[in-house]
Length: 285
Image (cartoon, rainbow, N blue to C red; front, side):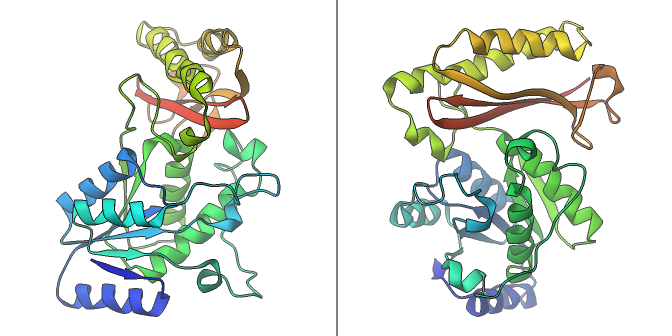
C-alpha cells in the first residue's frame, strides 16, 4: 500500500493506473476511520481495480467555533484499516500541501446548501465542495464513494458533479450503525457513557417518523412533530433541526407526495451535550 502526502506523486500514480486500463475508486475521508468508512472502501474494492483513500481533516469546512483542533485523529489506526481492506493508495497531505498561503479559490453552490446543515454552518459546504473538487483533480478516479449518513453532502456532491460536468460517478452507500442503532460517526468518541446512551434518541425518533410515513401519513408537520416529541423526551438532547425535504433538491416539503422524484429525506441534527450528531432516513414513496 502506497502512502503519500504529495499531490504530484499521488496524481502521477493514479495516472499510471489509468494508463494501464485500471478502474479507480476513491473514498474521501477526514480520517479516524470506522466501520462506516470501511464499508465504503469495501464497496470501492468490489467495483474497481484500484482503490485510493484520502485522509485529510479539511480546515476550510469548519466554522470559527467548531471542532477542527479537537477533531479526532489517528493516522496509524487509519492506515492499518486501509491496508486490511486492500486499499492501494492512501493520500494523507498536510494542509499546506492542499492550500497555498494565498489560496483564494472556492467552489460554492446556491439552493441545496441553504437548508439543513447549511443553516447553522453557512460556510461548511463551500469548504466541502472545494476540497472534494480538488481531490477529484488530484485523484482522477472513475467512481467516488460517500456515505448516506451525510445525506445533504451526498446530494451536494452529486449536484456539483452534474453542474460542473465532472467525469466521475458518485456512489452513495448505506448508513452503518452500531448494534443498538446509533449511526457510526467519528464524533461519537466525544460522548461520555451517559451521553452515548442518550444519543440513541436520534435513531429512535427517526424510526417513529419512518413508521408514520410508511403508514401513509403525508403531512410533513405531523411527521416532524412526532420525531421532535421523541427527541425532546431526552434531557441531554437539544435540537438543531428536524426537517423533511425533497431529496432531489433539499427543499422543504409540506406534503410528502410532492417530492419531485418521489424520494424524501428526513434528517435531524441534535446536540447531545456539546456534541452535534446527525442522522436521517431516505424513503421512496
